[in-house]
Length: 102
Image (cartoon, rainbow, N blue to C red; front, side, top):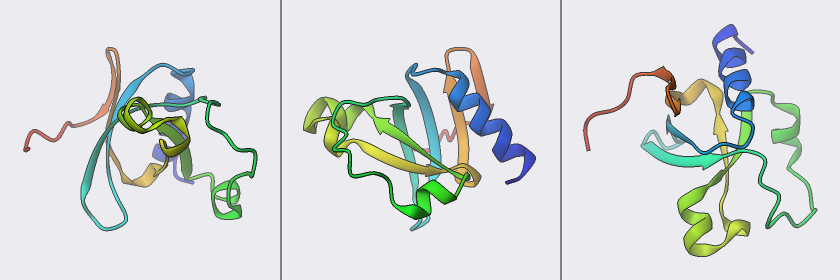
């Protein structure tokens, strides 16, 4: 894991469950803008994460707040690759540059 990825991981964990905004590239190359948070346990079935996620420190699991509000917490979990994050913000704490194109 690179130094930038470690900084991002520590920054996200420092939010301690607060809602934050993130923009990242999905596997198919499209930009996803998400409002999310970490540490959500509602909707967890107890089956565990796949081994790929557990073994890869470059991946972090978050809960998409929009999906959780509309479809329920059990469908709202997302995995973000730290090397694909373009923008991250929680209050005044930001990282990267926000995409201004809609």
